[in-house]
Amino acid sequence: MAIRYRFELADQAQPLEYIIATGQGETGTTRAAEPARWTRLAYHQCSNCPLDKDQDARCPAAVDIQQVVEDFSALPATQRVTVTVESPARQYHKITGLEEGLRSLMGLLMANCACPILNKLKPMAYTHLPFASQEEFIIRSVGTYLLRQYFHHQADHQADWTLHGLVELNNELQLVNQAMWQRVNAGCEGESNLKALLSFFAMASSVSYSLEAQLQKVRHAFMAESDISPYEGVRPSNQESSLP
Image 1 (cartoon, rainbow, N blue to C red):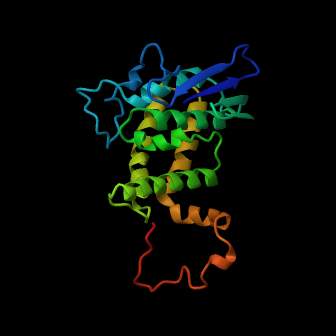
Image 2 (image 1 turned 90 degrees about the vertical axis):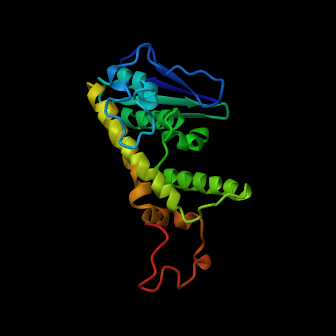
Image 3 (image 1 turned 60 degrees about the vertical axis):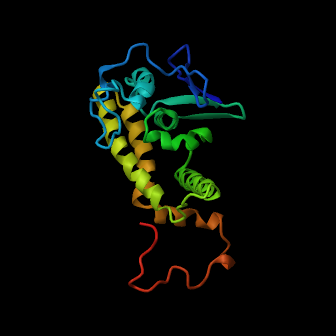
């Protein structure tokens, strides 16, 4: 499955288009012709990166987002843009600020890249939802994780129903986020990419720092009042919650 992003700006005659290949054997159009110096693996390498800088010359995520960074680096984050996202199943169309459009595109690129850590988000790329709200992001993150645990259970592997693994994964992602922001900061002349990445990272961090609070915000959509026990949430003082 390939996903096409098209950005139409009022002061540019031609739209900027990117094809992101999310399936094996497909080709995309987001790679720059020549990798920039800030894509070198050793340049602000993530502290938890499992790759060897002596064997892997480039950061997979940086290589995949470089062209987007260069295309939008000089544009203001508040500039209005018409964004169209096409997948084999449907089309999305929104007039919004450049920041939101870039946040959506960069989130897909990073989840779809070959980074061993970010690649764990591949299911999110498989079910990509452009312009997702905070609530939608939480529901998709938790739902995707629990579906993976179901498949683990079906294969007679240990399953994590407490979401501890999801929090641990997103703690790992925070280290990646910080290093990636430093990379983009070094290679970006404008503000759009920085704000778009910061917006994306802030949304992702909610899984690590306030998952329980975020889940409570969407609880009403999944449970009727009659389904909630009056004693729910009341626990002995020495009993810890299963979520942070």
